[in-house]
Amino acid sequence: MVIGISTMWNALKQSDGGALIDELSGLGFDAIELSRHLTREQIEQIRFHSQEIKICSIHNFCPMLPGVPQSRAENDPIHLSSLDADERGEAVRRTIRTMELAVDIEVPIVVLHLGEVDTYDRSYLMYDLYEYGEREFEAFSKKVIEATDWRERKQAEHQDAVLFSLDTLNEKALRMDLYLAIENRPRYYQIPDFDEVGMFLERFEGSNMRYWHDVGHAMLQERIGLCWSNRWLEAYKDHLIGVNLHDLKDLEAYHPPGFGDLDFKEIMAQIPPEVPKVLELRHGRAEELEEARETCQSLVPVETSEAD
Image (tube, rainbow, N blue to C red; front, side):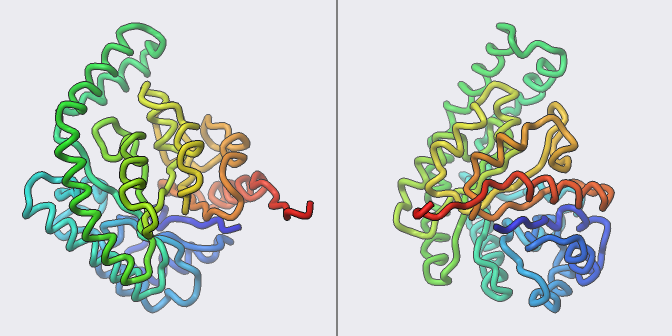
């Protein structure tokens, strides 16, 4: 059983990569995940500490893209789903650099953010209606349908672009002996949606392509009417290679498990004990982080042998 912590927790607070790793390793976690919030300088410093604690996974793009403010590392200017060949090619090259970093510091899994469908973002309409308590009314359902309809009009060409990118990345991953993990995303216009995970996994069946589940993202999709959160693990458990854990307060993500409104006893029961679990949290008090780790550890189902 592995319970790790993402560098998202202190990447913006600890400019020195060595101090960043030291702080996280002192909190009692089994492993560290390298997030998208790390600068090139932090990565170079982390290299010297990479043998001190297990690094279980890394997200693309890492290190973060040049010219992007560290506080906005989630807002990629380039995507693996882009219809522009030059932009998509640059996203592939940057992902390969992340993969090369993974090989260099012996990280087995690269978690992929695949991009998005180029459509007008109507998420704020669904978020506003949810916050006004309109979740069960017709107006909410109408906005969900309108948004997903717009996505469906444009998604096929972006799916093809993703497949084009993944063809190249999968071939590289096989030669590098790396796993690539497709992560579910929180917003309706992002790739993949529920069906697209199945499409991509089927296309690369028998390869090193896997599924990475984010608990908070799945519940955010449920709360704005897109997909029941339990469907992802039920459908893709056989392909599951890792999980990000964070709690929600209504629609606000990245709280420590146990400090929001999700039922982590139910959530942890759905996740196989042997699958790595990584807390992905905004910065907060170390005491909350340690309490969240202990909560998750106590809720991991006990593995039983066939003889039992």
